[in-house]
Image 1 (tube, helix red, strand yellow):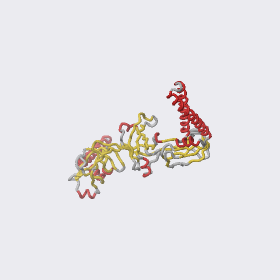
Image 2 (cartoon, rainbow, N blue to C red):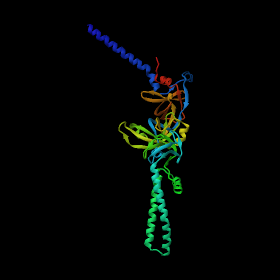
Image 3 (cartoon, rainbow, N blue to C red):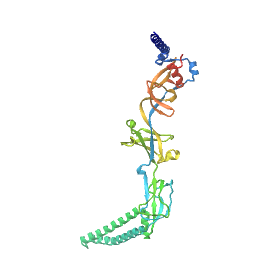
Image 4 (cartoon, helix red, strand yellow):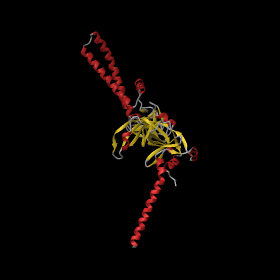
Length: 384
């Protein structure tokens, strides 16, 4: 008897709990209905909730993702200035960070090997000049028929050989670092000099200095690294899940900087270590931009945001205008009687704003502040 009475009491408790749950569900039915329809709310209540209205802002670009990048110098714009001959450095004229012009003397070397090269050049010049007299004489005699054709050919061949030797030794001097003006002066004065001037091959900035005055350098030893900063590249690591979204021509915005770049190359292979794709973006006129903004430097690691142009109608709204519910995003559109809840898709975020798309015309007034209060009213939160 006691066991049957206990079971009866348990059944009564279960029935009461089910009835309570049913009544609770019925109590919330009006708010669930409101979640599917417009929110009816008076203007006074809107003011009391601190709701602020605003307009949708049309957007033409979509922020796709943020990715790390490194600022690099294009290979064609970077040069290593080396000692073309072995010798002793007597003077260095440029320091790290200096701006130099093409042809400017960067260093002076005392090179004994240069004396031998100059001597051989002057010897070849003397032999060519001596052969030139015979060449001009036999050319005249051959034209008059005084000498045989064979003799004229031998004289002409010998003269051309001396001319080739002069050109060879002249080019060796140029490779050694002598300019055309210095070689012409040597030809006229015939004064040998062991001092070798090292000139800047381009106009640019000294990125590194690898020698000191008084140091004895071997042939082709590096002295300076010079770079032309008129163009810089961004090497961006794109995560593999976003590889299909990135296109050539997409804009790249550098974090905390007004400087932008444009993607010009997408790599053909993925880094097996981190599964990222290398994308290259070009910063144009970077030399003037660096002078104005100190936020980008060669060799620097930075954060970037890739932005893509949109062909579809998208809009920019503050993040505070968006409400989240069950993994979906909504905005509240102002109507005559209150607000309409409209589902949207958040395409991207950029700072305090989001780029959205949806069934929108662009003329709607939306709640840009107070969306939390409207969401609570919409879902019936706080109802008795």
